[in-house]
Length: 507
Image (cartoon, rainbow, N blue to C red):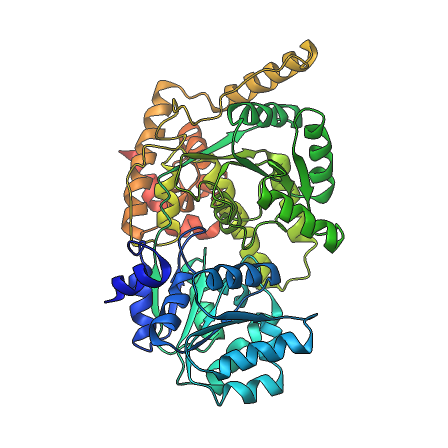
């Protein structure tokens, strides 16, 4: 019966991974926490129950553009929908309420601020409501990567209407963030469903770069390998965004840039131009992306490392929404880690939040330096219902893939720069080159790390980074005091893994 309704109303042949579980929980009037990745079909999880039950559904969303887009798509399917936002005329608002008063299925989108209005709270007390859907629910949690104070006040929903199920949806959230969302929204024994983080059409690649020129060369090669389809390039600052955009405009057509410092009208026009296809290459900060749903993004490049794995995963997830092969490339350098460290140090966040930000940054650095399967590590990190040992399509599993961005030296690179780069690379290799005995230790430690990761259900990079294992392999510590001198081993990891490492070395 549900499948018939899906085909009749939404013109879809079947549910995606996880969708049916989430929908069934809502239809059973249970609170639910649902994590589906970018492009995984989150919106259907609240649109379907409203349509199926022929009732009013209220959706909390942070972006006016996203609300308008979803309303437009629903109306095309013949489903009544509207959104309330600042700047609307009174007649537009009256029309929406008149349609709702006629009864039947209706999806009403609004901002979290509107929920706090006394008049609106009195109104929802009188309505037959199928559900409250909180989209981008990671904004509720102070531990999340995009906390918003206005979202924290949404706990009023459960106070006003304890009879209405709440569906909290996000594209990326760790177990800690999910716990915080449930607590802040006052969910009652919520069903927790984490699905779909595995994107088999995406090729994950991380490339370590020693300087900006090397980064630019990798980026240019990526643009050369992807002459068709849209391309997103993420930068860490507005200055780099504008500078890189100007550089690319001198070489390519249809290039634009986007950051929060631009006038609202200019941001809106840039977003619309990218959606229309007038811009093919967009250089942006993390201000661009929430609610963006372009199917043919073939390449996503992180020119600078983001703040955490959540941000990385969400931004990579904008590639290949049409399920065609696409590549996600992160250009990693120590300088980028320094930039994110600067942001944390100058943050006004509380001590515990800062501590978590440092921990999340270190996790991303370890992920960048890992030699394990990148997709498998992501699935374990988010505790997805699906797990892999090897994906077969990341730079660790398939370094010869046609989807991998290959290294290229460009003509404008002068000889002195090449010589300098070769020297730096040689010095870097000298530091990590292992003797046969050290290599044997390194492989023993890698096997131990993999077994420990399986035992604790943690990504290998959370146990210890490759750099730490190499350091152990080289120095061959024999005591806990010796281990304290190893890169990446602090008091916490010494307590958890110290004796295990010494036992492995003594084998």
